[in-house]
Image (tube, rainbow, N blue to C red; front, side, top):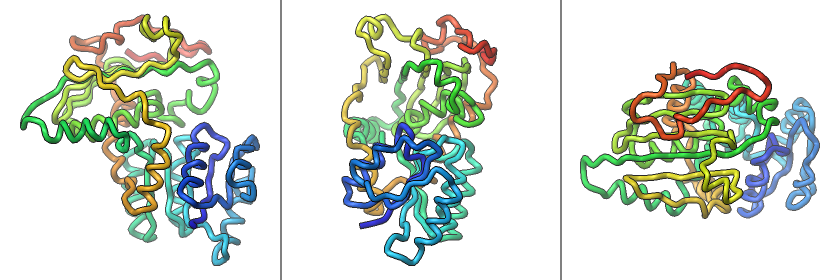
Length: 326
């Protein structure tokens, strides 16, 4: 049984990590969050030490060294811009680290952590759970075994409606979240480059507070993508079905279905990591490079071959901020 500490335990993604730790027969001995709505700990780890002050959390970690409560693993579920500082802290304090995506906001940070891994002898693993989805793994195998030189036409659409709270939170601050492409899309970009190969060209058509659209030329595919958190972008069939999230991946005119099979992917990720087969932080470098390029790019506008939804009307920021770029 390994001892885990978790930072960001009150956040949205933390319950999946808590379940995975319990499912793999391990124990959370300490948790930290600025917010104290953490009753979720009672389900599996009622004896877990909990702190709302980082200094107290770190002091407990220090005191636990060399005891039966010494922390083996640090789990990072905090806002995106804090991932690398916590990874750095874990490595320097004798822990291996499991970090939620995105592992970083900048490629240079990935390289920094890779160097620190060598110095400390400890490792950072990233949650790239779509690679463990049965349908997606089968698709990769099919593409890998397909005709040499064949290129595919791919269209990715992902709309996940968010309310005004989103823009007031850290997620609405590009400096903290990395923007739409990073915050809701990084795992899709990782999936695409994992299946269809490295990026040859990365073109952004529209980049705004609530959407991003562009084109990726990969080794084996040309990909049009549209990502948005604005429910007004939902297609009519999604609205009529009273759905607030719409996700589709079209490959050469055929829809690829992968909307099911997500419930146990964090547990599967932990099983791989604890078995020495997890995805190291260096494996997230390509997708971080994709989203960093998107974030820094000057949008090309509505060029020929855009994703169809890119032509929709642009929205005003709900708080009146005019940061639309197109």
